[in-house]
Length: 296
Length: 296
Image (cartoon, rainbow over all chains, first blue to last red; front, side, top):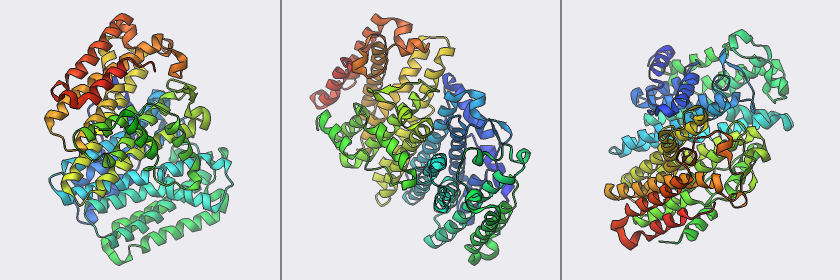
């Protein structure tokens, strides 16, 4: 296995390789897609996909188009989320958001373009393996896993509950739904898809699903904590937005102390899911530890 | 083969069957997706998919999820196109547009949800045929064809040129790019995907691609004519919008008479592409004739 930074370098190096050629008449579309892809980010999701595939003995170069597709999906969701009609953010990772640079119309189309490109790239990979039925089936499963967790039962459903949360009664139930779907689904998808590409068995899939769901929920709980007491300069965008927008998050429902306890308990649960793999799974257990103490 | 109305009934009957179950916390998302799907429309694209599959001896019940996915993609593109930041339309097919009913935030998410659902449904169908390598490969090709023509080389690229056309020099070249990609690609995709699902050979694929591209460009030329001299009540939305928005279309570049000649010549070219199939292809040739004289 490689280190987090080595996986990330691989992704950054190839991030735009899979985007299809576009005509000069649509040059601004591609430019705005690449702008948001290049603006930074931890690359947590695509790294998880490569690492999971690698862990289970798969070929990470075959997994790379899926890892990049995952980042296209994550990036489109941020572009649309930042729009004036949604969270209305001018800054993302300390840089102007897509619509403040390219206008709302192009930002909408760039988001659509990134989501569509993800599906186009992944189905293209499935077609490319038409001569190897077993491999083809693995690729199809991975593509379907990603599209399902990104979809209306997954991330888009979570986004809807988040956006409409201000009109619903804030409850532990609603907060958990948002954490699971807005956030944890897109952290679970790459872990499962990476394993699927490598042909991992169901027992490994189950263990890593538990790891990823717990890590994903912990990620959102910490985002809620950082929105409450984080450092604006480190985070690269305004804090306190959830409260301003009347959004329902873990801190406002359970309080700050409970949020910190929950973060720690979820991180422990994530690591315990991989206990049986011992030191082989150290990439994943130490990642969970690092994510628990991140400041942005 | 069935009649246009019979194919359309099949689609209307099953249109929402393939959308995954959603939690009550995201109920408004599903409601707004279904609202725009049910608001009407000719179902031209999904009918073309079923008819092409049927023509080439395929199983139209296997093609149905693809036909519905095509309609999800077409519908998402209309929802996003109607947004205030895009064409800013209050009416579509004589009914309030998605964002005027559900708000811009939900309209953005409903569009994302429909696009994602299309990819989720189609990749799910590929996975479902994992035991039959040849069939699975056909399904993967069809899914990839649809995602490619819907994407940044296809419809989204065309939309971008259309939206940004007001800042470019109006030219025959730009108009043709918009016609081909904004419109003809999403008429060609179902024809090719339907044939692919049925396992048609390259010669038939080429003939029908020519038919579909010509029919698709003709469709957009007539839309441009109708935007100039159509009946608002029949069309169900304001006419003259292209001129108001300074958009580049066939009529403003070539004039109304040339547009009508072009419409007739493209329709003839479409029909000639299928000459060798004689009366067997009457469904498609008579459809081209009907589309030439449509009023909305």
